[in-house]
Amino acid sequence: MPLTLIDAFSRYLNRCEALVEPDGKHVHRILDSAFMEFGLPVAIRSDGRPFASTGPARLTELSVWLLRLGIRIEIIDPGKPQQNGRLESSHRTLKAETASPPGDHCVSARDF
Image 1: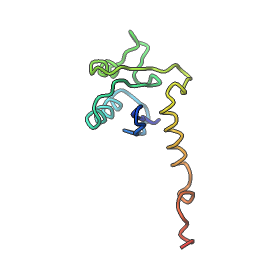
Image 2: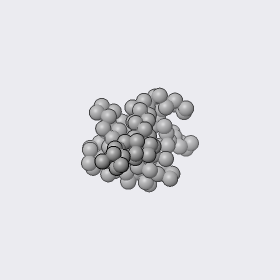
Image 3: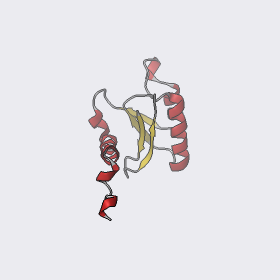
Image 4: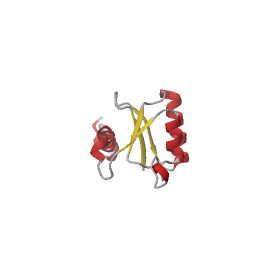
């Protein structure tokens, strides 16, 4: 499962990490690294994992940390990826660029 951090204004890909399970500990480490490099965002938009839970106020340790940093958490509606269109668009681009065999993107050695 990818954890993708994209700047909403510039569409710059800040991070793209493959995670087996996006638990709070691993996501915290990745976010902390991105914040050190790029600064704090105004908001983070997510499908809910790992920022939401079924507990009181749907908060996790990770979401409490973000809120204490002054970062607004925006959770999109379940099953509505179009609410996070910039991210979905970047996923399509990444998939298109990485899913094809290298021969589709390079001149074949036999052509030399």
